[in-house]
Length: 296
Image (cartoon, rainbow, N blue to C red; front, top):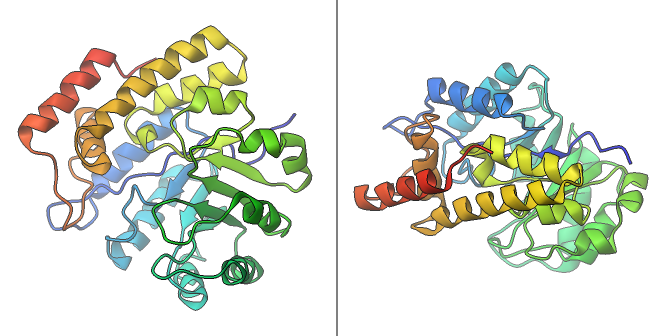
């Protein structure tokens, strides 16, 4: 079956920053080019890995401009425009309508609990009004998380075209087949590092933070799984899983910063008040990365 337009490895691009928390444009160009050269199939811009919640609106706008210019339409681009109400999200999205993005993405509002009806109304209103098709961003770290049943119901809307589902379950794609999703032109992107297994079970793609530091490996796992090369997919997935362990030596974002720095992609990606790893822990992350290897 043909793959949807948005598929494969779609890393949530980090935001390289200078010491003043302004965007490091040289590093953003270097990181974006490295991911393109690594074969990624799309990019997710201003997501949680980019710390959209902490960078300024000016930095978010400049990052979105630069990435669109660098990519030049070669792969699909998703721009997260999440905010805390219907009107705030629509207003935020309007600031980017002039840029060459294929999709907008949005989390549910995350500050206070909403009813199921309010959540559905929020996403329907966005889909009815936004100038680009909508991809749902469903994540467990916000207080309003969509159920599987709600995601499936929202997929009936013709302008809601996919979901990034950060869910530990690998079986949602078994209960919701690729054929059924294709009928609705809907893409299921898994927010998981278990690329090999989840691909085999029918996921359309992934939004892996590790794709910033190890894009070649993430793409290689996907390619092997799609080719039904089980032995290669298993070996590569084992390598990626061992690298994922290095993200647990401190906060995930701080560890990812070390990994990206080790690869020469950026120096900083943590806006205040987030702190980088201390030198000893950073050396431990690098030592483990070197021991595992980061090329397929």
